[in-house]
Length: 329
Image 1 (cartoon, rainbow, N blue to C red):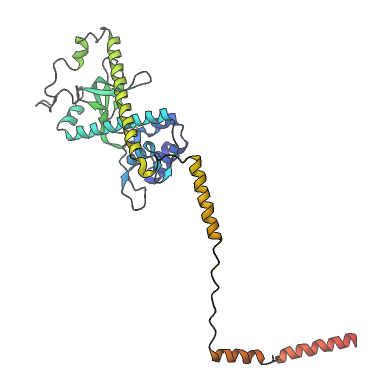
Image 2: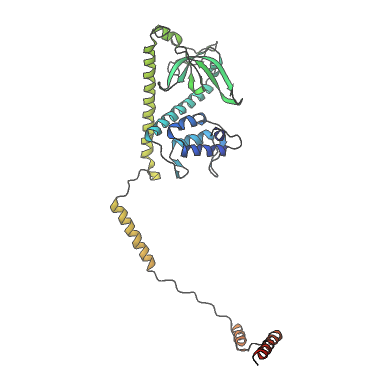
């Protein structure tokens, strides 16, 4: 499956792989398959005479909507479908954050400095997606396995409070405090300017959440923050569903179903219309055009003239008579 999704010969082979996933993959495994390709930049034109898009656009549309160019896709279980929409919304915000980093002067250079204090997103089976303080250990510009260059750099970060190391994308990393603490740029040394005092790694020590300082309270706060973020994303997903339902009359998805009485009424009208069509008189036969007078006289002469046998036919008749006479006398 991975070979199909990452095929290098044609983007249409990759699209066929994603269609196969959409129809046959177990719903609970869909996210792990499509996550790396949500913003794939390879160009593809899916519809004849349609606009050119990217593989990422195709994947997000395929797994975020039930309509595929007039074909109704199979529904996912409601809880899995909404969870998938929440993750797609989170990925959308990560993409917006990555573009903001690219457009902000000095931010990429700050992230590329080893040892820079940052925030990074992390989640596992026991903890929801949450921001944690981290330190940049390494910058990846190429895939370690294939050697293919990344469109955007990735970062290997370590979470000091927990000791684990993870690889994150540009959209899953941010400066300490993010965009909520009034940061306007970077100073002459390339560090974030106007940082709040005590923010960063010292914040955990001041609150007694550093080494040996009762990290359980900090973990509880982080977990609560993650659940709050998930709740906010779910509310946004539900809001979008309501907005789509209110405008779906154009596609007849939100129309009231016909009652039994209305269905029988429509069927009776159809039968009546069909019987009226059957009672219509057939169209009169088309009149054949008569040939001109000279042609008529020639046809009459040909019919009245006796048929004259050819010499070959006369010889065959005489031979047949001779054989009959010889046999029967």
